Image (cartoon, rainbow, N blue to C red; front, side, top):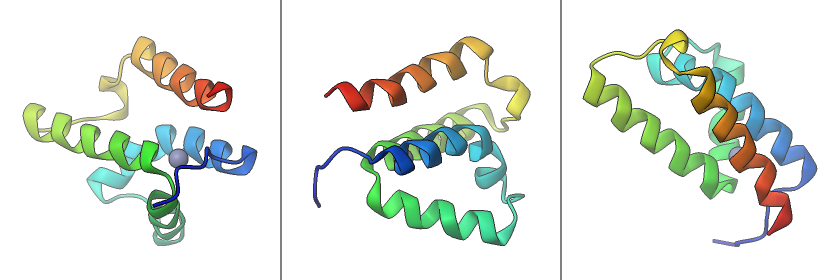
Amino acid sequence: MESTPPSPHDEMVCRELVEVVTDYLEGTLPDEDRRRLEEHLRECPYCATYIEQMRQTMEALGTLSAESIAPQTRRELLEVFRGWRDR
Ligand SMILES: [Zn+2]
């Protein structure tokens, strides 16, 4: 797999993904959004890793709602995504 950093467009999808990840893992994300997200996952190892970590967190907790992701955690994730551009 190529290791080129995400383009600005991809970064936008990455941020969006943070917002919808719980819907995706709970299976409540609309089909169209889910298809777009899965396409992105194939091209974006960062998000693929993030999703996998979230999935494991959900399994560990038994459940996960958007509210259970602390604002602090969200902020940290968004900073990680922003940091990709600097590599
Ligand atoms: Zn991504």
